[in-house]
Length: 308
Image (cartoon, rainbow, N blue to C red; front, side, top):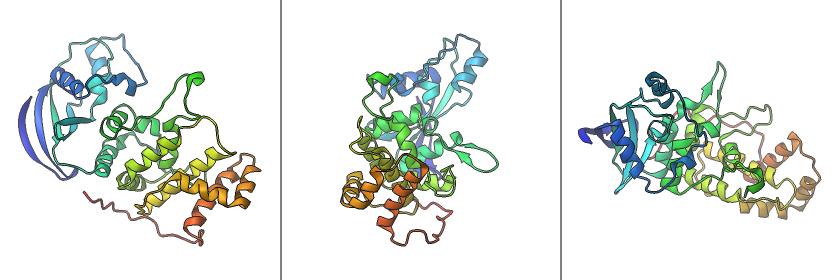
């Protein structure tokens, strides 16, 4: 691996080292960063092509893009972009070419690393003429999940066998609510690009994900509509983050408040599942924070100012 340049990246806000290396050598090097970890655990596609045509393989593996990103912290390396090209086995070909590895070398804060990962993955946000589509399973795929586990020790439960599952709902499917807007007027629940960026750059982003994964560790609901109440918590916290709130939020705090509010708790137990259940739960959260809930609020700033 040859060091060919050093500098400062004004977008990623970090000093970097740029290396030239053969693709085959980078595959070996990058795998060494993760020891005995089975990288297939982070790729549930298990796709293998039987077509060894070089052009087809370049398309499937993305080899035509020869730029890779990593973050170095002390003597540890974390791949930030390039999982598909380095770790996925699509077939046997003799493709090899010089590629470039850009290593971020500054000590970066957790929320800034998460925002960098958000920027690297923005291309996955599907758009049409009116709005984008955020799908967390696509957005936090392979490399994103590997980064969360290797850097923050966050691993999502993604069972495939219904009969051996350990949780009522898969972690990613529940976490999806944290990245969606709860709204009384329409069902799309989509945040704007800028609002998603604010959530990913909030100083509590890693804490929030840890809390959600921890709380989702249940098979049986302790009371009726517990699942809906948990989802209301995620909607509520993400809304607070969009508005710049950096306080710590714990789900148990709101469970305790719900149980103390005997009138609403009894009402909730008598509800059948309809969209009005969601609306009532989200109103419960908002009224705790703001007794004047319902009054017009200013839109979030169009510019993201992040402490680096």
